Image 1 (cartoon, one colour):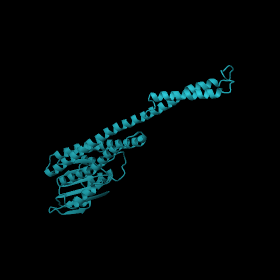
Image 2: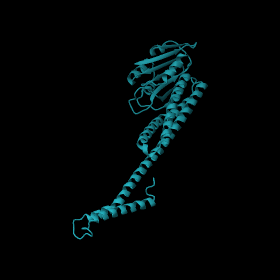
Image 3: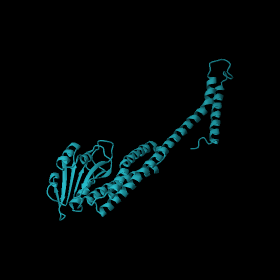
Image 4: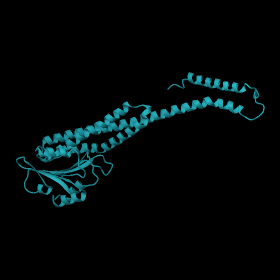
Length: 318
């Protein structure tokens, strides 16, 4: 099992130690982060940290959604953020589970979040002195990291709307489908994450200071804005997909019209040539040397007449 921990003394000094050493001795604030599978984390949380089975199960559950709950004198928080590691499922965000009580925070993640390094740097600089500071820093870092990702989805959809034309239908449909799928996946977690942060900001407890609650409320507002943005992206992508489908149908209609016009031009010509191609006696002027030229000229006149009729009816107009 891999993990790292920090201890903050009464004088504000920060010491990086092993997870087991963080639980020993006196310290104003301890943060233990575990990066392991469920079995290893369960054993450490149960035996070394001494947490109750309900909290251990919550910190090591396989399927998780963002949420915040008050448990005893502390709180359990589950948030989702980006990771550079490959995910085992179709989820686009990795989870970090947080157990916080006065003076102690334990976090568990199976995939390392890209924003965790930033939080660790803040911890080592002595900027995080209590559980409220740490949770607010994690929530703020996660939302700030996701903000440009959601913005890029919106910008990508704007580009697709500007490039909308009948000659790029298949390329645009693939891009729009991908962005719509990503927006739906982000929406699955951003909406409950906003609710979790809002609930966390209002949980009772003396381990959350007023400035921590303000930071959590700000992170919840940003998560709400991102949830609204991905919802708008999903709806815009659906409209874009319908527009591309209409363009494709219009293309098919135009091509069908061209085929129909060509068929209508050649239909009387085929009848005329087929009639004179019969191997029977009695065809008018069949023995005349000028008959072939006359029939060819008649076919040209008929074809030209049909084309002129189509032009006057504006059937060739794009």
